[in-house]
Length: 189
Image 1: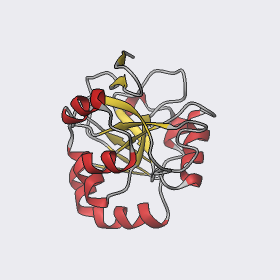
Image 2: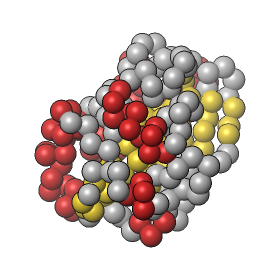
Image 3: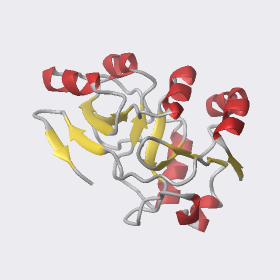
Image 4: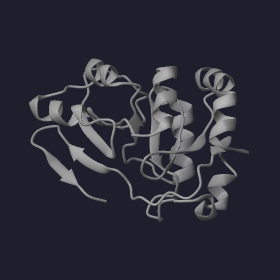
């Protein structure tokens, strides 16, 4: 397991991009809110690894969308959702109905919805460049405190990831969930 600074990540992003498409590593990365654990959201085996790491069998994961266009192509953006999509990037997870199977089926098991994010953070630029949705879920086991610095990282989780992008301590809370499948429903965490 490697710990990379932002600069080291930027210097190795071509290698990381290739690995995401071919091997789909599991990694921890910073966002505009907290640290997330992720992988290529189209790779069922990688998604299953994250489920096992987090001890989270059924609850859906969200994804960092490569772009607003990706959201429009793969999700139903109703009138309520249009205003929220315009607010992206930002500290929101928008829950939308999907038009197609745009991610592995185990990202949101037995659901016709998907939580999508575009963090207001440099890491989103990488996701746009690779044009692959990435799983985004807090870097902790289910029902445990979310991670705000590497000092908080569960050693068992640390031992099961391929690399970590360290940006120092995050002083935020998880994104707000905005359920836009029907009416607007804001869920604070």
